[in-house]
Length: 470
Image 1: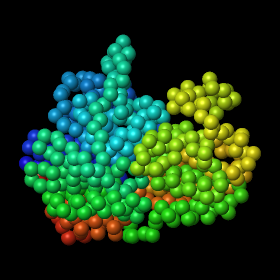
Image 2: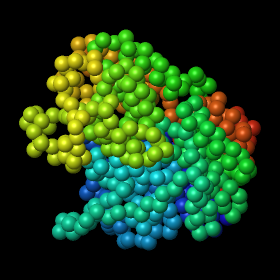
Image 3: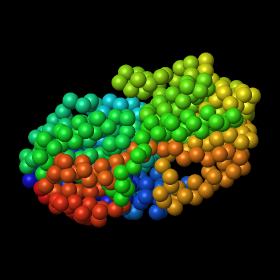
Image 4: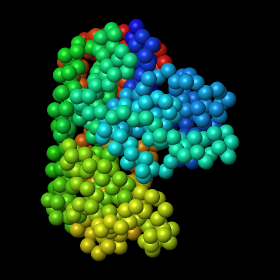
């Protein structure tokens, strides 16, 4: 018997946690954080209590209460006895937090399967993030009941990596990962061959990106297996076909920056290699230096090692790394305690805000909103801010967006929205589903599941925690 039980991504974007069982073999497809659900209860200064292990997360239904899957040190805080896990692995579609982050809570003996590039991304996140209970994906420090037991070294998780063409065998299950195009590299759709037939899982994908051919490869392979079930993302099922593309981001952004005679500020997701490449090209075309952060360098250096990504290194002649102020504000080496910065302080291409202010038109500065206080040192009076991210889609994001606009107004920056979504539009998604023609459709990662009812196939309106037999 084959069954699916879905614990996240139901009437929400992300938080995917899909339990697949076939004759006693259990695997999870993704185990991600639900941003929407978490934000209902927590904010910057009201956070889950580490001292309660995973108790706060279970009590508020942020993770499913399933025996035997969680870290022993975390369940001890709840007075529960350790249990050996019967889940045989987690197959990670890609390294975005809403698909990956709550692997942090899982038992060390549950192996993680992901693409080589996803593992590199997770390593980069681990290198430059402050450790907390919700981002210990690569390794974790045990949090036992008694302080004298805290001296143990980090526990490493077991990772098995793959690329397209390599199949994963777990008992009688055969999982076939096939690359797809998304807003970060290393994203995969999955075809799971079970005893009852094949089940397709899209992960997150799109048809309008630079690498749309990869998504076509996944669609063609999925069609061939005549799936008994299909689990599909539906982030933009309510959006009709658009003319967005990475090339349009390039053209619009280049036009705006070329007209600007002052400082250019750029904001995009560090993980998005396509977007980085777009602004790297623009910088070269306009004879400017692209200024990135030390955090961005953590990703770029790993991308550079992957020859298929064709990414420049962080020491590239067209790239500079912006040195932030710490402690004394004098840029002395002793000010920097974060290891990801300390190990790069001797790079030859480091620059400070004071140097940029001398000839601001020579630079394109990548500056995330959470580092906007550096605008005070950059001193722009006019110039341009290119927001190359999605527009706000919830109340908390709207509050941050208005705060961002206040900074932009204060420094007289021109706001330009220039973005290309990482998710497939509704028109293309319906065509994809009709091409694959699964027997049963399971829409997740969407706030509009009802729209899927218009398709000419059996569609489940999923209830969280309900077992669906195939």
